Figure 1 (cartoon, rainbow, N blue to C red):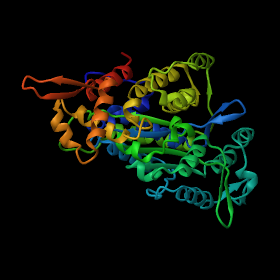
Figure 2: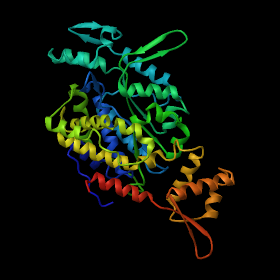
Figure 3: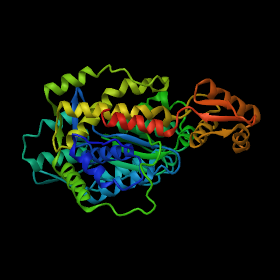
Figure 4: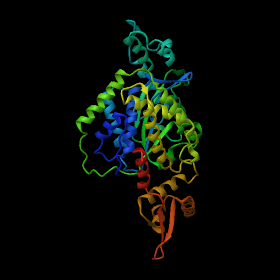
Length: 438
């Protein structure tokens, strides 16, 4: 697209070099790289925040129409993690139920043997499972192998979940799953009660990356998701179009791939304990605390309240991408730039979710018009005649025209044409300009 993307974080540059000959939008690969770092850090790392901690985990949702190579970016990230680290992956299919994730976390905790001071410990010992991150920090003056053992214990219930189809992962309108995912983003304990017993997960943490389309998201997400705060914890990453056409994919190049894996290996094996920040970095980040969101969509009100936490999480990952646990000002500057560019596409990613009962139809019409330079009203009506009654279709078209998403013009032949006021290329160009610092 003519924009050169260069980052202060070497890992991002190596990652983009590795995926240069792929079709996925660059914004997908940038966040996939960030997700890989976050997954490698797990729960062993945190940022002290008041009486609690902020963990570096992320919930990433790659959103685009079919064919934008969402799953390609996800599969590349997952492969690098599997080759370079020992992170634990959640089951590929949980049937949209929280029980599958809970069982995986409990299995993960019970599958390992922990030694401390030369003595074997029961990994289900409540005295260890209930340790807070601050309490773990107080033992870091012990020999490294001993302190690391306790930190590893805290990381046992950390999972990495990936899903090519996010709607299958969360199920249909499943509020219980969303409640559980909210707890595993915050890293707080979660109580789960069955007919016969009560299970308490002391230290759950999840890194989540999924793929979906705007239409699928509108169909599967319960309307209460925004009010519950789940959506505010998601980074919605909109990919407008392919980066470039590549008829015959080629293997990833060896040199940048080796650098990516070496750095993930270092992050996974060598980094543990709290992150800190320079005074200059703290001052700059605090200046962004009430930064006004540059989108006027009311559905992102809760996200706006949580943006500062997203900024810190992202800055931690960027610092780790420099092999450092000290956040500097440039990390916050870069995190802010990446967030601003990503936020530009968030309304398109969310589509018509939460707007009215005809949201799915409206989003489908809008996406179809974006793929066309112009389409006659008759052809558009014919395309969706099985999806809605005539009056519903007319209501959707009128709403999109009133909101300036579509334009209606009269052709020389007398036919009415519909065109989209903003194309996918417009959104993509704006995001890349912001990423490039233009």
